[in-house]
Length: 449
Image (tube, helix red, strand yellow):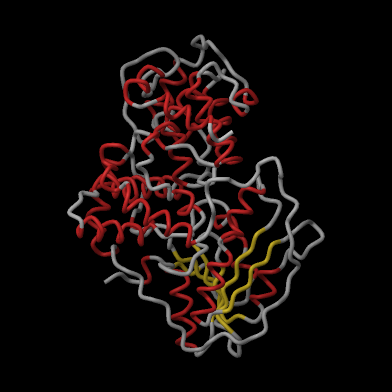
């Protein structure tokens, strides 16, 4: 049986407040109710103390690349969260800070009446920053709970080199953790006063509009999961690298915003595959081993946006070929506006610009070509990270940073040496044409205009 301590870390030594009105759960990353170890931990604590639970979710305007795309996706999930919490008897506060004149102390205001704060453990912004700065400012206990990974991040005491070193460790630990999170039941319904905060639309970047394809929220995530099970799981092993076939789950953005749990997805996929006599190994490899390898990378990396994180062989080979002639060379602006000579690359970039996502296989090609057509590897990485962070609904995530750096050699091995790439794996247009239906994909993106 899984132990709570495997996921829970106490980040200060403040005492439990007596006479408090509730236990506070702060949803920084996992913006969901079901399969949420953090919320479940808060509910257990509240039940022991004879208190209700208050679920707090905040959104501000001043984080890097804040845009209508991200804010719309987050706000689309609010009605789902609110309805489910109301059904359970848990209080809910959603506060969207509009501008610099609006209160910036909303968490501290709701924490004043709390016995303790429970929040999300996460190796990147925002939780990494706030879990370092907030606990010392509170006079109540502050707990961070890992509900992002199936096998808790604490199960690994060092950074893993690649999937082949991560895989046996995950498989050894997985039976202990691949089990349902018990349904949340609170003994004390929340009936208290909820602070009122300003409401409206924040002044974020309007030049990155909401996605016309992807809608946020737990219900949208579960609809996509059901569609994948019925229409694509049986095709995944053979066609997941065929973007025009739409055989992938499309869940990465919902995992990123915490609208669905990777644990729930894994259990549902396993059950469906067993019932329908399907083999789901390839999908579960991506969902569990590859995704949690990325979290392991982010946890043990100070700056996931640096070439210094590459293995020694990759840094050395890129340095050796840093002065190789590049032709063509594009600027970051040309990349951003999809103004290259390559119709496939331009289509992938337009998919990102319009929808907020690129199919995973073509995203590898997208990253490889940024490396090939940039003046330096450092400039290439900066461009790829900027485009990912500004436009991708599944960006700013351990998986997206690991996937970008994979294009530069992370979690890979040396290949035959060639110009510019050195021993870093190469991907070319002709190879894409042999392996995938490029023309069908390009046509599908043209229809999005």
